[in-house]
Image: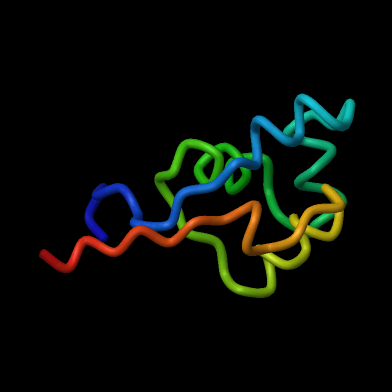
Length: 75
């Protein structure tokens, strides 16, 4: 993607801070990712794999389609 932001946005940081006391590092550990990956996903700089998206949604007790939003840039 060459540094371009992804067309998949998310509400991970908002949900993580509002509903849990999980740090980025704790969330990363629970989903089997690195803290750097969680930072990049929350900053909309990286779209997670489908499996990672489901893992994050499960830990945050949120539906995938409510946590992640696809906004195509096809124009």
